[in-house]
Image (cartoon, rainbow, N blue to C red; front, side):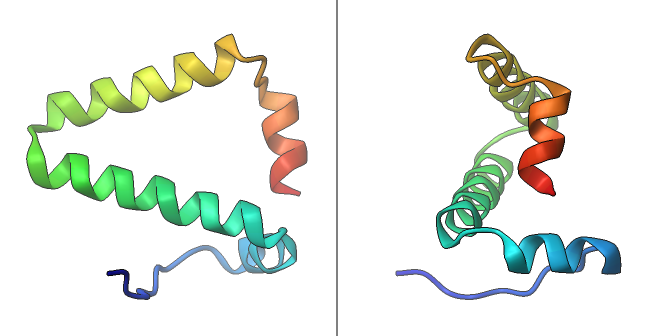
Length: 73
């Protein structure tokens, strides 16, 4: 079961999110869900480790700061 929640974001990011493809918005939801599950089930150190691992995996797959910026625009 899933529910819809509201998250505060900067005003200038709203148009970016709203113009993103549905697939991208779903991925954001999945990432938030994973983050919250990890937070629920572990210590802050484990969460930081998970975030570091996600970043390293993204970089290993070729994600650069420039590509990330393009995806967010």
